[in-house]
Image 1 (cartoon, rainbow, N blue to C red):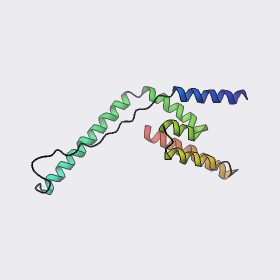
Image 2 (tube, rainbow, N blue to C red; image 1 turned 60 degrees about the horizontal axis):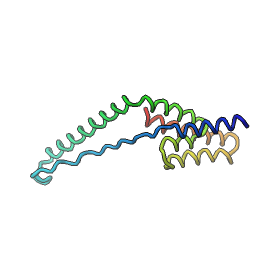
Image 3 (cartoon, rainbow, N blue to C red; image 1 turned 120 degrees about the horizontal axis):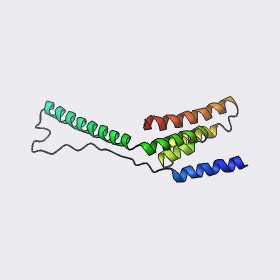
Image 4 (cartoon, one colour; image 1 turned 90 degrees about the vertical axis):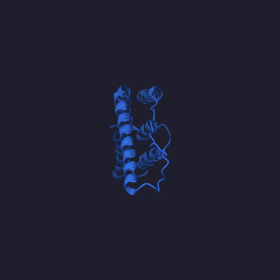
Length: 143
Protein backbone atom coordinates (compact mmCIF):
# COMPACT_ATOMS: atom_id res chain seq x y z
CA UNK A 1 0.00 0.00 0.00
CA UNK A 2 2.85 2.36 0.83
CA UNK A 3 4.46 1.64 -2.53
CA UNK A 4 1.23 2.54 -4.31
CA UNK A 5 0.92 5.79 -2.34
CA UNK A 6 4.53 6.63 -3.05
CA UNK A 7 4.13 6.01 -6.78
CA UNK A 8 0.93 8.10 -6.86
CA UNK A 9 2.73 10.92 -5.06
CA UNK A 10 5.60 10.67 -7.55
CA UNK A 11 3.23 10.88 -10.53
CA UNK A 12 1.44 13.93 -9.12
CA UNK A 13 4.77 15.61 -8.39
CA UNK A 14 5.82 15.02 -12.00
CA UNK A 15 2.56 16.45 -13.30
CA UNK A 16 2.93 19.58 -11.19
CA UNK A 17 6.65 20.03 -11.88
CA UNK A 18 6.54 19.31 -15.61
CA UNK A 19 7.43 22.40 -17.63
CA UNK A 20 5.00 23.67 -20.19
CA UNK A 21 6.53 23.19 -23.61
CA UNK A 22 6.28 26.01 -26.05
CA UNK A 23 5.13 25.05 -29.48
CA UNK A 24 6.71 26.96 -32.28
CA UNK A 25 4.91 27.10 -35.58
CA UNK A 26 6.43 28.51 -38.70
CA UNK A 27 4.37 29.47 -41.66
CA UNK A 28 5.88 30.19 -45.04
CA UNK A 29 5.75 33.83 -45.94
CA UNK A 30 3.27 34.62 -48.67
CA UNK A 31 4.73 35.64 -51.96
CA UNK A 32 5.45 39.31 -52.19
CA UNK A 33 2.99 41.00 -54.46
CA UNK A 34 4.58 42.73 -57.35
CA UNK A 35 3.13 44.67 -60.17
CA UNK A 36 3.62 41.70 -62.43
CA UNK A 37 0.86 39.15 -61.99
CA UNK A 38 1.45 35.40 -61.95
CA UNK A 39 0.04 35.07 -65.44
CA UNK A 40 2.56 37.50 -66.85
CA UNK A 41 5.49 35.73 -65.20
CA UNK A 42 7.07 32.94 -67.12
CA UNK A 43 6.98 29.43 -65.73
CA UNK A 44 10.69 29.57 -65.09
CA UNK A 45 10.34 32.74 -63.01
CA UNK A 46 7.44 31.21 -61.07
CA UNK A 47 9.53 28.12 -60.29
CA UNK A 48 12.44 30.26 -59.15
CA UNK A 49 10.16 32.30 -56.91
CA UNK A 50 8.70 29.17 -55.29
CA UNK A 51 12.18 27.67 -54.93
CA UNK A 52 13.40 30.80 -53.16
CA UNK A 53 10.38 30.73 -50.82
CA UNK A 54 11.10 27.10 -49.92
CA UNK A 55 14.75 27.90 -49.25
CA UNK A 56 13.89 30.77 -46.93
CA UNK A 57 11.33 28.61 -45.12
CA UNK A 58 13.84 25.77 -44.64
CA UNK A 59 16.43 28.25 -43.40
CA UNK A 60 13.98 29.64 -40.84
CA UNK A 61 13.10 26.13 -39.67
CA UNK A 62 16.78 25.21 -39.29
CA UNK A 63 17.47 28.37 -37.29
CA UNK A 64 14.54 27.73 -35.00
CA UNK A 65 15.59 24.11 -34.44
CA UNK A 66 19.11 25.28 -33.66
CA UNK A 67 17.75 27.77 -31.12
CA UNK A 68 15.51 25.14 -29.55
CA UNK A 69 18.44 22.73 -29.17
CA UNK A 70 20.51 25.40 -27.44
CA UNK A 71 17.74 26.05 -24.92
CA UNK A 72 16.80 22.40 -24.37
CA UNK A 73 18.67 21.59 -21.16
CA UNK A 74 15.48 21.45 -19.06
CA UNK A 75 13.54 19.70 -21.80
CA UNK A 76 16.04 16.82 -21.72
CA UNK A 77 15.21 16.13 -18.09
CA UNK A 78 11.49 16.34 -18.86
CA UNK A 79 11.91 13.91 -21.75
CA UNK A 80 13.76 11.42 -19.54
CA UNK A 81 10.97 11.62 -16.95
CA UNK A 82 8.35 11.14 -19.67
CA UNK A 83 10.18 8.06 -20.96
CA UNK A 84 10.19 6.59 -17.45
CA UNK A 85 6.45 7.28 -17.10
CA UNK A 86 5.82 5.82 -20.57
CA UNK A 87 7.34 2.51 -19.49
CA UNK A 88 4.69 2.13 -16.77
CA UNK A 89 1.69 4.26 -17.83
CA UNK A 90 1.92 5.09 -21.57
CA UNK A 91 -1.35 7.10 -21.87
CA UNK A 92 -0.32 9.38 -18.99
CA UNK A 93 3.03 10.02 -20.63
CA UNK A 94 1.36 10.81 -23.96
CA UNK A 95 -1.10 13.16 -22.24
CA UNK A 96 1.72 15.00 -20.49
CA UNK A 97 3.73 15.14 -23.71
CA UNK A 98 0.90 16.54 -25.86
CA UNK A 99 -0.70 18.63 -23.13
CA UNK A 100 -4.20 17.59 -24.25
CA UNK A 101 -6.21 14.47 -24.87
CA UNK A 102 -5.18 14.21 -28.51
CA UNK A 103 -5.82 11.32 -30.88
CA UNK A 104 -2.38 9.95 -30.03
CA UNK A 105 -3.38 9.81 -26.36
CA UNK A 106 -6.56 7.91 -27.21
CA UNK A 107 -4.64 5.41 -29.36
CA UNK A 108 -2.23 4.78 -26.51
CA UNK A 109 -5.10 4.44 -24.02
CA UNK A 110 -7.04 1.99 -26.21
CA UNK A 111 -3.92 -0.14 -26.73
CA UNK A 112 -3.31 -0.22 -23.00
CA UNK A 113 -6.93 -1.00 -22.16
CA UNK A 114 -6.92 -3.84 -24.69
CA UNK A 115 -4.37 -5.58 -22.49
CA UNK A 116 -6.99 -6.05 -19.74
CA UNK A 117 -9.53 -8.29 -21.54
CA UNK A 118 -6.88 -9.95 -23.72
CA UNK A 119 -5.22 -11.61 -20.76
CA UNK A 120 -2.05 -13.55 -21.52
CA UNK A 121 0.13 -13.28 -24.60
CA UNK A 122 -2.23 -11.01 -26.56
CA UNK A 123 -2.58 -8.72 -23.56
CA UNK A 124 1.17 -8.49 -23.20
CA UNK A 125 1.44 -7.66 -26.91
CA UNK A 126 -1.19 -4.92 -26.58
CA UNK A 127 0.58 -3.44 -23.56
CA UNK A 128 3.93 -3.62 -25.35
CA UNK A 129 2.39 -1.98 -28.42
CA UNK A 130 1.12 0.88 -26.24
CA UNK A 131 4.56 1.42 -24.69
CA UNK A 132 6.37 1.20 -28.03
CA UNK A 133 3.88 3.54 -29.73
CA UNK A 134 4.18 6.15 -26.98
CA UNK A 135 7.98 5.98 -26.91
CA UNK A 136 8.17 6.16 -30.70
CA UNK A 137 6.02 9.31 -30.84
CA UNK A 138 7.88 11.06 -28.02
CA UNK A 139 11.39 10.17 -29.13
CA UNK A 140 10.90 10.67 -32.86
CA UNK A 141 9.62 14.21 -32.35
CA UNK A 142 12.09 15.13 -29.63
CA UNK A 143 15.34 13.95 -31.16
